[in-house]
Length: 345
Ligand SMILES: [Fe+2]
Image 1 (spheres, rainbow, N blue to C red):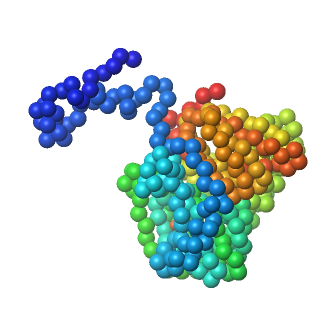
Image 2: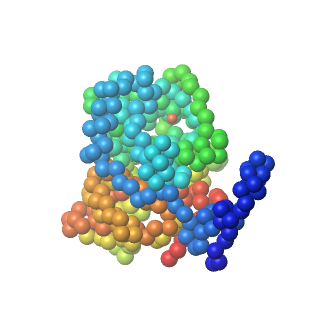
Image 3: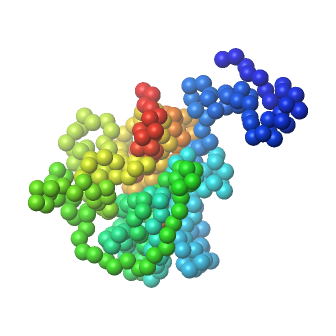
């Protein structure tokens, strides 16, 4: 590619006149916005070990009461984007949220989609559109765009969960907003029970609901059992992975971000395909080493890291006895909808 003209090559009076008329010459910036073959990525491979984050989160519990926080969260910000941007990648926001016994995070709804991956503690719940979802370690709870949600805690120990939102992309498109609400009336019934058996879905009066969000809670006990069964059934299978989907449509559970769980067999080294979306790994059980093009992180239980897109990633479960279980969030649905999704070998 030949070198293009620079801004400094142009006379100052010409540049001033362009700026005055809100005009910009393309050629000095063309290579930056259309780099050859590999996109420019601000997202940096970054790790947030839980052991270093947890004491600071607990201190936030002492420093800031709920009525002054509304949501008591330490945002896991990617330094590549600048911490003030509060984003883990181009489309993903990550936060570690603390709810203390007896506390209540008031009801609201907003345009960004959120999920909660429960990290520690028992007794907390999230009510989504009247459906009360208990929160236990490893459970995934959806609070999709526009749905009322609130969090409460009837237990005795602090509860912590990982929030994954598509806030950066929704904010970027200038569509991010919230409405406050009253405490929700809890209704009976729960999607995760109605859809708990694979291959069997509610078909009431011969009709399917085709609901957008029929299932709001994906218990870890079920996802884990699915991974173990898949691993046992298919010893030949290299990648033992499940995806969180809408059981009515078979499509992604949410519109913008994708969610998966992966099991690494004892001693397994797994090379992931190089793909366009950025990925977040959150360790649920066991330990793994993550190597992202030379940058290495050791993920123990509750540790979280983010890896930019277009990056070769190798995961290694060094344990000879124990499988390792990882929750993954990524930007696949967004990339597919935009038509930019790519797998490079
Ligand atoms: Fe929210």
